[in-house]
Length: 288
Image (cartoon, rainbow, N blue to C red; front, top):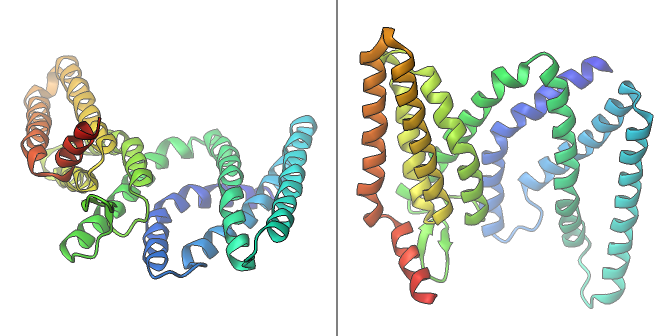
Protein backbone atom coordinates (compact mmCIF):
# COMPACT_ATOMS: atom_id res chain seq x y z
CA UNK A 1 0.00 0.00 0.00
CA UNK A 2 2.91 2.36 0.64
CA UNK A 3 3.89 1.88 -3.00
CA UNK A 4 0.35 2.88 -4.03
CA UNK A 5 0.59 6.02 -1.87
CA UNK A 6 3.86 7.07 -3.51
CA UNK A 7 2.73 6.32 -7.07
CA UNK A 8 -0.64 7.98 -6.67
CA UNK A 9 1.00 11.04 -5.10
CA UNK A 10 3.17 11.34 -8.21
CA UNK A 11 0.07 10.81 -10.38
CA UNK A 12 -1.75 13.68 -8.65
CA UNK A 13 1.19 15.97 -9.34
CA UNK A 14 1.31 14.94 -13.02
CA UNK A 15 -2.49 15.19 -13.19
CA UNK A 16 -2.06 18.98 -13.05
CA UNK A 17 -0.50 18.90 -16.53
CA UNK A 18 -3.64 17.34 -18.00
CA UNK A 19 -6.05 19.83 -16.40
CA UNK A 20 -5.95 22.30 -19.33
CA UNK A 21 -6.80 19.50 -21.78
CA UNK A 22 -9.71 18.33 -19.62
CA UNK A 23 -10.92 21.92 -19.21
CA UNK A 24 -10.76 22.55 -22.96
CA UNK A 25 -12.65 19.35 -23.78
CA UNK A 26 -15.21 20.15 -21.08
CA UNK A 27 -15.62 23.68 -22.42
CA UNK A 28 -16.22 22.47 -25.97
CA UNK A 29 -18.74 19.86 -24.82
CA UNK A 30 -20.51 22.34 -22.54
CA UNK A 31 -20.73 24.76 -25.47
CA UNK A 32 -22.47 21.93 -27.35
CA UNK A 33 -24.97 21.70 -24.42
CA UNK A 34 -23.81 18.25 -23.30
CA UNK A 35 -24.59 17.96 -19.57
CA UNK A 36 -22.23 15.11 -18.67
CA UNK A 37 -18.88 15.76 -20.34
CA UNK A 38 -15.75 13.69 -20.81
CA UNK A 39 -13.81 15.97 -18.46
CA UNK A 40 -16.40 15.59 -15.70
CA UNK A 41 -16.34 11.78 -15.97
CA UNK A 42 -12.53 11.70 -15.74
CA UNK A 43 -12.52 14.05 -12.76
CA UNK A 44 -15.18 12.05 -10.94
CA UNK A 45 -13.16 8.85 -11.44
CA UNK A 46 -10.02 10.57 -10.10
CA UNK A 47 -12.00 11.96 -7.16
CA UNK A 48 -13.28 8.48 -6.24
CA UNK A 49 -9.74 7.05 -6.26
CA UNK A 50 -8.52 10.09 -4.30
CA UNK A 51 -11.02 9.35 -1.50
CA UNK A 52 -9.59 5.81 -1.29
CA UNK A 53 -6.04 7.27 -1.39
CA UNK A 54 -6.78 9.64 1.51
CA UNK A 55 -8.20 6.84 3.66
CA UNK A 56 -5.20 4.57 2.96
CA UNK A 57 -2.81 7.45 3.67
CA UNK A 58 -4.44 8.08 7.04
CA UNK A 59 -4.43 4.38 7.97
CA UNK A 60 -0.73 3.96 7.12
CA UNK A 61 0.31 7.11 8.97
CA UNK A 62 -1.65 6.01 12.06
CA UNK A 63 -2.55 9.54 13.13
CA UNK A 64 -5.76 8.37 14.79
CA UNK A 65 -6.99 11.76 16.00
CA UNK A 66 -6.40 13.50 12.69
CA UNK A 67 -7.69 10.50 10.73
CA UNK A 68 -10.90 10.44 12.77
CA UNK A 69 -11.52 14.11 11.92
CA UNK A 70 -11.05 13.53 8.19
CA UNK A 71 -13.26 10.43 8.17
CA UNK A 72 -15.89 12.34 10.17
CA UNK A 73 -15.67 15.11 7.56
CA UNK A 74 -16.36 12.61 4.76
CA UNK A 75 -19.31 11.18 6.69
CA UNK A 76 -20.81 14.65 7.23
CA UNK A 77 -20.13 15.55 3.59
CA UNK A 78 -21.94 12.40 2.47
CA UNK A 79 -24.94 13.10 4.74
CA UNK A 80 -25.21 16.72 3.53
CA UNK A 81 -24.98 15.54 -0.10
CA UNK A 82 -27.81 13.03 0.39
CA UNK A 83 -29.96 15.65 2.15
CA UNK A 84 -29.30 18.08 -0.72
CA UNK A 85 -30.48 15.51 -3.27
CA UNK A 86 -33.62 14.71 -1.26
CA UNK A 87 -34.52 18.40 -0.84
CA UNK A 88 -34.00 19.10 -4.54
CA UNK A 89 -36.08 16.04 -5.46
CA UNK A 90 -38.99 17.21 -3.32
CA UNK A 91 -38.78 20.93 -4.11
CA UNK A 92 -37.99 21.04 -7.82
CA UNK A 93 -40.77 20.59 -10.34
CA UNK A 94 -38.29 19.21 -12.85
CA UNK A 95 -35.71 16.94 -11.23
CA UNK A 96 -33.10 15.64 -13.68
CA UNK A 97 -30.98 12.98 -11.89
CA UNK A 98 -27.98 13.23 -14.25
CA UNK A 99 -27.83 17.02 -13.90
CA UNK A 100 -28.28 16.93 -10.11
CA UNK A 101 -25.59 14.28 -9.64
CA UNK A 102 -23.19 16.18 -11.92
CA UNK A 103 -23.75 19.41 -9.98
CA UNK A 104 -23.29 17.62 -6.65
CA UNK A 105 -20.12 15.90 -7.85
CA UNK A 106 -18.69 19.27 -8.93
CA UNK A 107 -19.45 20.69 -5.47
CA UNK A 108 -17.63 17.97 -3.53
CA UNK A 109 -14.77 17.64 -6.05
CA UNK A 110 -12.79 20.65 -4.84
CA UNK A 111 -12.61 19.95 -1.08
CA UNK A 112 -11.78 16.29 -1.70
CA UNK A 113 -9.05 17.05 -4.25
CA UNK A 114 -7.63 19.84 -2.08
CA UNK A 115 -7.27 17.40 0.79
CA UNK A 116 -5.80 14.80 -1.57
CA UNK A 117 -3.19 17.26 -2.85
CA UNK A 118 -2.31 18.26 0.70
CA UNK A 119 -1.39 14.67 1.54
CA UNK A 120 0.23 14.05 -1.86
CA UNK A 121 2.55 17.04 -1.50
CA UNK A 122 3.29 16.03 2.08
CA UNK A 123 4.32 12.59 0.81
CA UNK A 124 6.41 13.94 -2.08
CA UNK A 125 8.12 16.54 0.10
CA UNK A 126 9.88 13.78 2.04
CA UNK A 127 11.97 12.80 -1.00
CA UNK A 128 12.07 16.39 -2.34
CA UNK A 129 10.26 15.16 -5.46
CA UNK A 130 7.89 18.11 -5.22
CA UNK A 131 10.83 20.55 -5.24
CA UNK A 132 12.34 19.03 -8.37
CA UNK A 133 9.27 18.41 -10.50
CA UNK A 134 6.42 20.71 -9.42
CA UNK A 135 7.78 23.85 -11.20
CA UNK A 136 8.24 21.77 -14.37
CA UNK A 137 4.63 20.53 -14.09
CA UNK A 138 3.35 24.12 -13.81
CA UNK A 139 5.57 25.17 -16.73
CA UNK A 140 4.14 22.50 -19.03
CA UNK A 141 0.56 23.12 -17.86
CA UNK A 142 0.76 26.84 -18.69
CA UNK A 143 2.34 26.02 -22.05
CA UNK A 144 -0.63 23.78 -22.87
CA UNK A 145 -3.00 26.61 -21.90
CA UNK A 146 -1.07 29.00 -24.17
CA UNK A 147 -1.16 26.60 -27.13
CA UNK A 148 -4.91 26.00 -26.74
CA UNK A 149 -5.56 29.76 -26.45
CA UNK A 150 -3.51 30.59 -29.53
CA UNK A 151 -4.99 27.78 -31.66
CA UNK A 152 -8.51 28.87 -30.68
CA UNK A 153 -7.64 32.50 -31.47
CA UNK A 154 -6.27 31.89 -34.96
CA UNK A 155 -9.03 29.42 -35.87
CA UNK A 156 -11.72 31.87 -34.69
CA UNK A 157 -13.20 29.22 -32.39
CA UNK A 158 -12.44 30.96 -29.11
CA UNK A 159 -15.15 31.72 -26.54
CA UNK A 160 -15.72 35.34 -25.45
CA UNK A 161 -14.46 36.30 -22.01
CA UNK A 162 -17.23 38.89 -21.70
CA UNK A 163 -20.12 37.76 -23.89
CA UNK A 164 -22.06 40.98 -23.39
CA UNK A 165 -19.11 43.09 -24.60
CA UNK A 166 -17.75 40.60 -27.15
CA UNK A 167 -14.31 41.46 -25.79
CA UNK A 168 -11.53 39.15 -24.68
CA UNK A 169 -11.10 35.47 -25.38
CA UNK A 170 -10.92 32.42 -23.14
CA UNK A 171 -9.82 29.94 -25.81
CA UNK A 172 -11.78 26.72 -25.42
CA UNK A 173 -12.00 27.26 -21.68
CA UNK A 174 -15.46 27.88 -20.32
CA UNK A 175 -14.77 30.49 -17.60
CA UNK A 176 -12.49 33.46 -18.29
CA UNK A 177 -12.19 34.63 -14.67
CA UNK A 178 -11.09 31.19 -13.46
CA UNK A 179 -8.65 30.96 -16.38
CA UNK A 180 -7.27 34.38 -15.48
CA UNK A 181 -6.81 33.29 -11.85
CA UNK A 182 -4.92 30.15 -12.91
CA UNK A 183 -2.62 32.14 -15.21
CA UNK A 184 -2.07 34.77 -12.50
CA UNK A 185 -0.95 32.14 -9.99
CA UNK A 186 1.14 30.06 -12.40
CA UNK A 187 2.87 32.78 -14.47
CA UNK A 188 5.48 33.83 -11.85
CA UNK A 189 6.39 30.15 -11.32
CA UNK A 190 6.72 29.73 -15.08
CA UNK A 191 9.02 32.76 -15.36
CA UNK A 192 11.20 31.50 -12.49
CA UNK A 193 11.50 28.06 -14.09
CA UNK A 194 12.35 29.50 -17.53
CA UNK A 195 15.06 31.77 -16.13
CA UNK A 196 16.51 28.87 -14.18
CA UNK A 197 16.73 26.82 -17.39
CA UNK A 198 18.32 29.57 -19.49
CA UNK A 199 21.92 28.87 -18.53
CA UNK A 200 23.22 30.06 -21.92
CA UNK A 201 21.83 31.71 -25.07
CA UNK A 202 21.38 28.37 -26.84
CA UNK A 203 18.46 27.72 -24.45
CA UNK A 204 16.68 30.98 -25.18
CA UNK A 205 13.76 28.94 -26.54
CA UNK A 206 12.56 28.68 -22.94
CA UNK A 207 11.86 32.41 -23.04
CA UNK A 208 9.85 32.04 -26.25
CA UNK A 209 7.35 30.02 -24.23
CA UNK A 210 7.05 32.98 -21.84
CA UNK A 211 6.28 35.29 -24.78
CA UNK A 212 3.54 32.89 -25.92
CA UNK A 213 2.15 32.75 -22.37
CA UNK A 214 2.09 36.55 -22.18
CA UNK A 215 0.30 36.79 -25.52
CA UNK A 216 -2.26 34.18 -24.46
CA UNK A 217 -2.82 35.92 -21.11
CA UNK A 218 -3.39 39.28 -22.81
CA UNK A 219 -5.99 37.65 -25.07
CA UNK A 220 -8.13 36.85 -22.01
CA UNK A 221 -8.85 40.53 -21.51
CA UNK A 222 -8.99 40.51 -17.70
CA UNK A 223 -7.06 42.88 -15.48
CA UNK A 224 -5.99 40.03 -13.22
CA UNK A 225 -3.93 38.30 -15.91
CA UNK A 226 -2.39 41.62 -16.99
CA UNK A 227 -1.35 42.49 -13.43
CA UNK A 228 0.12 39.00 -13.00
CA UNK A 229 2.23 39.47 -16.13
CA UNK A 230 3.47 42.88 -14.98
CA UNK A 231 4.17 41.69 -11.43
CA UNK A 232 5.90 38.49 -12.55
CA UNK A 233 8.08 40.30 -15.09
CA UNK A 234 9.01 43.11 -12.68
CA UNK A 235 9.97 40.61 -9.97
CA UNK A 236 12.06 38.73 -12.55
CA UNK A 237 13.86 41.96 -13.48
CA UNK A 238 14.57 42.66 -9.80
CA UNK A 239 15.90 39.13 -9.28
CA UNK A 240 18.04 39.37 -12.44
CA UNK A 241 19.55 42.69 -11.33
CA UNK A 242 20.43 41.23 -7.91
CA UNK A 243 21.95 38.17 -9.61
CA UNK A 244 23.94 40.49 -11.91
CA UNK A 245 25.73 42.04 -8.93
CA UNK A 246 26.14 38.76 -7.04
CA UNK A 247 27.59 36.68 -9.89
CA UNK A 248 30.64 38.53 -11.18
CA UNK A 249 31.80 35.59 -13.31
CA UNK A 250 28.92 35.93 -15.83
CA UNK A 251 28.28 39.66 -15.91
CA UNK A 252 27.79 39.84 -19.67
CA UNK A 253 25.25 36.99 -19.76
CA UNK A 254 23.37 38.31 -16.72
CA UNK A 255 23.24 41.78 -18.27
CA UNK A 256 21.72 40.22 -21.38
CA UNK A 257 19.03 38.58 -19.23
CA UNK A 258 18.19 41.95 -17.65
CA UNK A 259 17.91 43.51 -21.13
CA UNK A 260 15.74 40.60 -22.31
CA UNK A 261 13.38 41.06 -19.37
CA UNK A 262 13.28 44.82 -19.93
CA UNK A 263 12.38 44.33 -23.60
CA UNK A 264 9.67 41.87 -22.59
CA UNK A 265 8.15 44.36 -20.14
CA UNK A 266 8.37 47.11 -22.76
CA UNK A 267 6.65 44.83 -25.27
CA UNK A 268 3.75 44.30 -22.84
CA UNK A 269 3.26 48.07 -22.49
CA UNK A 270 3.52 48.54 -26.26
CA UNK A 271 0.94 45.81 -26.94
CA UNK A 272 -1.47 46.94 -24.21
CA UNK A 273 -3.45 49.52 -26.26
CA UNK A 274 -4.18 46.95 -28.97
CA UNK A 275 -5.28 44.19 -26.59
CA UNK A 276 -8.78 43.46 -25.29
CA UNK A 277 -7.75 44.16 -21.69
CA UNK A 278 -7.34 47.89 -22.46
CA UNK A 279 -10.87 48.10 -23.88
CA UNK A 280 -12.42 46.14 -21.01
CA UNK A 281 -10.60 48.41 -18.54
CA UNK A 282 -12.07 51.46 -20.30
CA UNK A 283 -15.57 49.97 -20.24
CA UNK A 284 -15.30 49.11 -16.55
CA UNK A 285 -14.10 52.67 -15.81
CA UNK A 286 -17.06 54.11 -17.73
CA UNK A 287 -19.46 51.89 -15.78
CA UNK A 288 -18.02 53.14 -12.49
